[in-house]
Length: 403
Image (tube, rainbow, N blue to C red; front, side, top):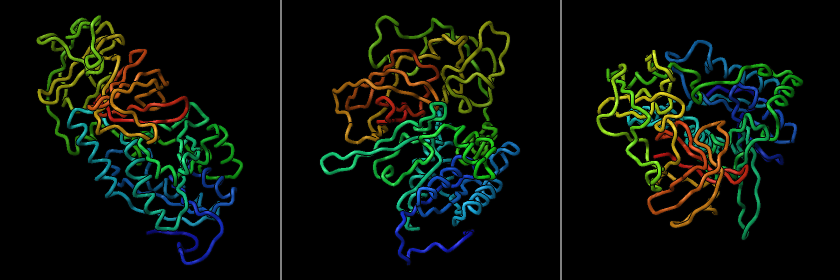
């Protein structure tokens, strides 16, 4: 394990609260560490090496060596201890293998949500506690508050002040015990303010571009990445007309409203071929390789067993837009455990199914089988495997994996 600065030990007394900051080599975590030190915390910087295979990473996009070097330079500038810790094996087991398994099933995973649940606030948190940390801090744009009820502290996860950067969705699977140990030092700031602070403190990351792509992997050629384990298999692309839905639009039940799109048998025309249905997701436009259509062509359904990709023309195709979704009981998560719904209960919340999507009004109906969620406005590109999160104003209440 690489280190810089004085040794990590729990054998001495200290008055200050100890915080381990996940220094990623970006501007957000850098400023988070600076602010915590200014507030009087004893700050330790820890860089997580989670991905070492650069074969599918786009050139100059999020190389871990460069990021760890920048993190070290920030730690030196702030005069805080620094370590690099290798989580690549557990990352592969919990995140990468999960991605492969989900895509193989024809589902659309969100590794960033899992990365926070399984890595940053699990194995990373455990490591930080071993170092005697009172808290773990990250550069997420979200906020935390708490209140007391019946002699119990209840923690609230709230949206970041910068609505364009709010990352509460990525933390939608956190539990109360994880929030208890979490600090989000920049959640009350705008991105521009964060960069200004970094520039004023002459931090090397001040003007560094934000990382893109998969959590800790960066921007990748996704087909090449998936083909490491998922074999290419030629299949048909079938275009489905807009009027081919099996449901009567005027008499849809709750179950029908929340069921993935289904079309009439034997409807559709072969318009092209693909290299594997598991490489596609609902709502996808790029990669189909089919031209000459009046309206844009989108993926509306995939059949992994038959290796067929179904597509439809236009943003208004019923296969692209759905009124609701379903979350099975064992996939429901409550960040606010005290607000769990019981079977037969119905509530109104705000919801989103992807990062940076505008919140929309939704009705949640709890049953023994799970939650049926219906929206006031049709939602585009709902795909199995995604996470749906629900909010009370700006507070994240719960989330779940879409069936």
